[in-house]
Image (cartoon, rainbow over all chains, first blue to last red; front, side, top):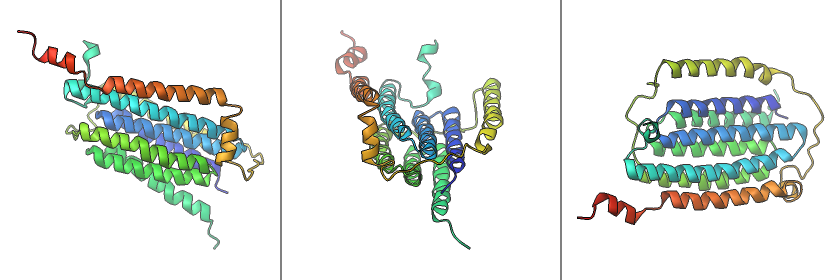
Length: 100
Length: 180
């Protein structure tokens, strides 16, 4: 049996990589991919604890996370397309209309 | 030497997932990033299988590596701009300090939690564990209300993204060529 800590460490590494992508990159697409990566790391944690405790409710919550991630991606990408249509950019630093 | 098969699988696909994730956040070309992310999701699906989560592994491949990434590919086709600026040019000293502080806090607070011996209780893994039947019993039993809320959330997201992304022909025409 693989120790639960292995999965937790893998999830932590993936979460950190996703967070770095969200913080460092300016392409809105890559930022959204970083968010998906972080959501997947959270899912891995949920499933690891579900196995450690023998409790399938973690699986149900991971299922909800996937559904929420799908709607997040749909809405986020729609906003991205809308921004690109009016401003011709996918660079998050240039999307500062609400600042001024 | 006895080889622990599942552990070997874990390490192979863990390394694959981490490499894919690093490639995803460092590529300039968004198409390459999407392909790397799909690879990461496949590796994660294998990790889910190693956690006896067969239903979630199938959902991971179908929904994540399938549907969500296809959505990304379509948007990449619309917004095909490779990033030209350097990555590591972060906005200012405050951002840099915040990033360093965040990493430090994560390491200091997170590391003990990772290496601490977890409570060893004998988890009962039944043959139903993680299957469609087992998870379905919970989704349509104890958690039926959140399940229905998520379905409404998906409906709202679909309608909302259609409204946001659809072309507003009349308004655009008015803005571009005002009445003479």
